[in-house]
Length: 401
Image (cartoon, rainbow, N blue to C red; front, side, top):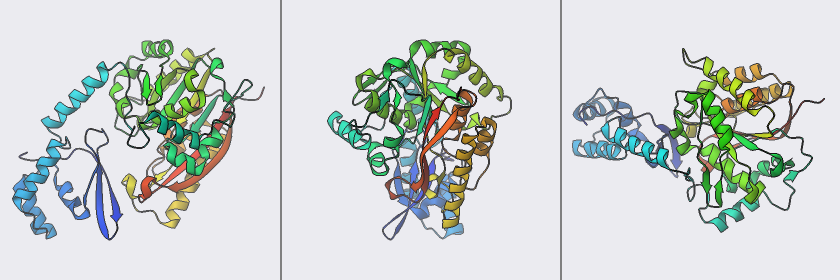
């Protein structure tokens, strides 16, 4: 508390009526999101570990004309500490406890139930039915598909745009699949590019098993792939994908191999360039001869204040569309190296959220695979927040003989 330091958090501006607000979100999920007046942004900036609380108050007064009583400032910093948002022992203790609890749990419990989708089984089933109606045939004994990509949009949003409904048609029957490999967009920090877990996934509709034999085969070859298993605790993309798998396959849902794909899959740190190559070689070896459906749960461009980026102008939105369409065009050739380069390129609005997962898919599919674009749209960010998201529904076919 002498020189408080704010952890890396997500911040974005939000207009609530005539009031400008700042929304703060913990990417590790230890603290609940909260909103405060936008002018408090300068307070957060000064929580850099180099200033005492009285020094922060003096800087606010002299540099920003903000006369914040010392007692109020101490109380605010104390609230951040209790929430685990400061880089201190309170955070480390809470993180260690969450890590231990997750590792010893037999099942990966849902994190978003009653937050972005209903936790009541009947209500969730009804929401999924509206988004992906069961009256439409979802599987086929003659399905040629080897993979799909859909956004990790909750059922309420999916029911509005219909993209997921159109994409999840004509999938292989459950009896034809040994496993579904879910390549999920990883929105949190991580040291290694890929991480898996052998935990079954529970949702309000039941438990989806893990493909234990396949996962163990991967872990034997890649000891590091479970090193950061805790990242699956808040794996939004995989949790949502499991819901749609349950809607398509019901009680016959194939076992899954959940794999989070982080940004270092596109831009490895020094000395870590071989991790991605190790992963690709391992997946090619363990999946050879197995009936696998690859499933990307991710999105393309994320732009605007909600994602901590500059406000989007009309021209800026058009640039996002053009960037997304360039990636989709590269999928048609297909050229995995070009896809990876496009997803890794720097951009004022950041890289595509699902770029690492999509780039990984392009390398895992058979050489010469064919891409079917079901629909693409740049849509408003969730909850009417200031931003835009690139949604794509893709179906992947094996190469022609």
